[in-house]
Length: 241
Image (cartoon, rainbow, N blue to C red):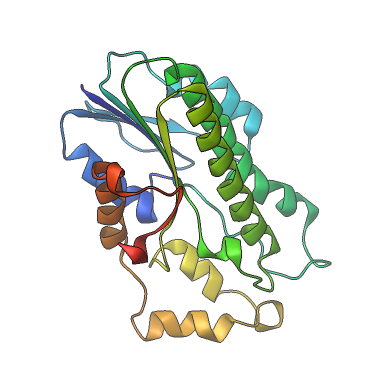
């Protein structure tokens, strides 16, 4: 197989749709990571991992990054967690640690392994970190989500700087997908109004059919990957192309 894709959060939402698109091309080998077990196929290998467990992820890296003479390697850090929606002072301490483990630490571990594995090899190399517009907004109740996505953005910028300096030839993108109709949006709508002043606004997105479909966003992700030369900046937003 010519192309290797490593995709986190592949069992539902945007990740599931991306997986379906990628597997339609038999030249692609896809290594998926999700908590939910999934059936493997000839060009799909799956690892049931909870990305909140950093040590477990670190112990599986050799299997996540298979050997092969690939022409292209792509890491898509899609998995993300909205976390507990509540103001600082009423958050569960374990949840604070977990959201940063899932949204920042796991992508960093996988990026580190990606560079270690492919940085010195001559092939097309790309990393797409699914970010959020919340990284740049002060949203009450979202301290964990907003700050973890902001950290992911900075991590992506630094990685691109290092790739340029070291000559790794890796392109990095932090991609905001917009407001997508996924299970995460259902979690947001289930929040308590006293914990999240924008609750009615997010409920209206669903009621007014203003949410973007996972299919539409998946197509934008694939467009970005197929037209990297048209995108000069690390930070991208699907609503802008």
